Amino acid sequence: MNSEHHQQNRRSWNYITAVHNAHKLDQAAHLAGGGSTLFPEELELLGDVAGKRIVHLQCNSGQDTLSLAVLGATLTGVDISDEAIAFARQLAADSGIAADFVRDDVFDWLPQAAARGEQFDIVFSSYGALCWLSDLVLWAKGVKSVLAPGGALVLVDFHPLFNYLDDDWSLARKASGRAPVFYPEGVGDYVGMSGELLAVSGYIEVDAPPNPHGVWEYGWNLADIVTSVLEAGLQLTALREYPYTNGCLLLPGMQLKPDKRLYPPADLPQDLPLLFGLRATLAG
Ligand SMILES: C[S@@+](CC[C@H](N)C(=O)[O-])C[C@H]1O[C@@H](n2cnc3c(N)ncnc32)[C@H](O)[C@@H]1O
Image (cartoon, rainbow, N blue to C red):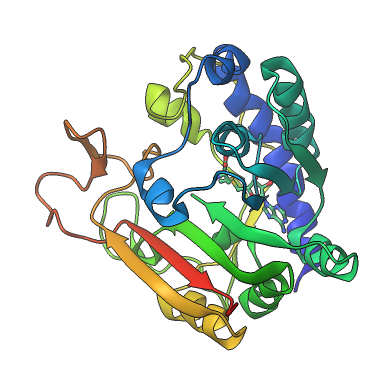
């Protein structure tokens, strides 16, 4: 794995996380009042989480983590971004929803948690997670090492098709798993592009300078992802592709349909896979 890339990405996420949260109105009141930032796709794959021990890897500012805690699970959120974890801890305090938040690189946290004997019923990660990880085989082994017998990895992420699409939806070659790409513009203000689709507690415009920290991105394909999970020794019990994304306007021209999901522009096939979900279990 490439720690230097991860640290570079930490700086980029620190900057943009503050911008993203500045767009979002009173998130604590939203969560405390029963609001959730989870989508039906992850809820279906997660199943009933009440009483489960869940670690949320790459939890960013903890909104999904706290939404899961409200459903009766015990939550630990892990993220490399200092800004994200500081915000998540404050959000937990302000909303009165309990969860532990740890600032760490998942590649450091996973083996250390396993060495401490920590075990979880569910390892969860979602929406823009895998493209920052420099070694999926190592990551999957780490995931397995903290799963309790019978436990499950639940992943929902943007479909690797996006690795091949340019901003105008024409075919392009972007980052691949084996050939990561450095984007000097850094992580973008996708909350600003998506408005209330992502800022579910309410949205305000923010005039933020561009991200000064570039970012390394890894474009893993579906075979990389599934193979890493299988080679770690987990059993694949669900693999889904969805012809839409949730929340994030990833490319210009996406259509918001009445089901509140985002589809390709109208002149393109409407059944392109834009999101995938996966559940893989450790034998009990
Ligand atoms: C798109 S966000 C994920 C958002 C998440 N779905 C949520 O609940 O809000 C990606 C996150 O991955 C984190 N990240 C990137 N590389 C990481 C690493 N090596 N270890 C831990 N977190 C990492 C970033 O700091 C960022 O918060």
